[in-house]
Amino acid sequence: MGELNRDQIVKIIAKRVAKELKNGYLVNLGVGIPTAVSNYVSDDMKVILHAENGMLGLWEDDDFSRHVISPAGTYSSLHDGGMFFDSAFSFCLIRGGHVDVTILGALEVDEKGNLANWIIPNKLVPGIGGAMDLVVGSKQVIVAMEHTSKGKKKILKQCNLPLTAVGQVNLIVTEKGVMKVTDKGIVLLEIFSTSSLEDIQSNTEATLIVPDDIKYVDINL
Image (cartoon, rainbow, N blue to C red; front, side):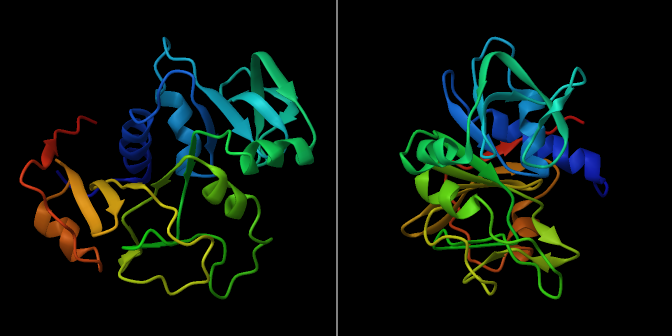
């Protein structure tokens, strides 16, 4: 398979991450690739999307309302039965451990499950936002990101950028495969047909643990 374009990368990652969701989950989707996960949740599954700016039942579709603004600043919509609330209540849900899964992007992740995603070198950014609370308060943290950034490795032995949280990442999904963070290191669970074992390891600074029962997954675009 040739070089992937941005749309293909987003589709591969978002579609695979959606398979990790279960009926009844309360899920927070970060800005960027994670937002696209909602497009691949099956119609027969009830997943409630949480927005830290004060919503439950958020949904991204073409029938949006100009009165509903997602954390990404885009017009969105709300499912029947959804609700609005203030920021204090929103973060009570997060800090109270009620969010089942947080899915977010990252600038760097390391083999100890540390996450850096809030500061970009030499660029002015608004601040750490809700990510610090979300990754600590959620029951599971999934990083959905491109495997590299302009050829620079993002899955490292140790993060170089200021950390968002320590030891909180459970799963990493890129356009190349799926990796699980364990106390022994990063285990490579799946290799997509868009890549190979040699390709994934050469683009990963951390040494991957490759189990005997690793899965090879065919990707159809």
